[in-house]
Picture (cartoon, rainbow, N blue to C red):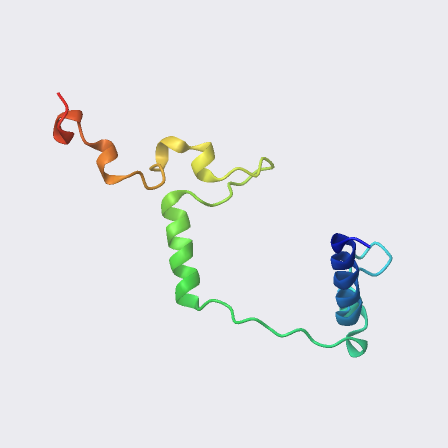
Length: 103
């Protein structure tokens, strides 16, 4: 048996143990969601603070890194690039050639 096959079987065994397998049907629920008493609870990871989330939102609004309304799934900075600056260019990128020793 190849190493890849062993890895897949180990992952399958872990998914069975933790109830991470999808239950048959259209709901798309996992075993641990349908039968929570039969499956161990997964540890809850620490989330971000309110201040961190608000800072990320402000940065996304400033840079247009938010998904625009509509079915295209494009970000605001992709739909309206003229409204948003390019992502961090090197500081010397906007200097004239004469400032860098050129003529």
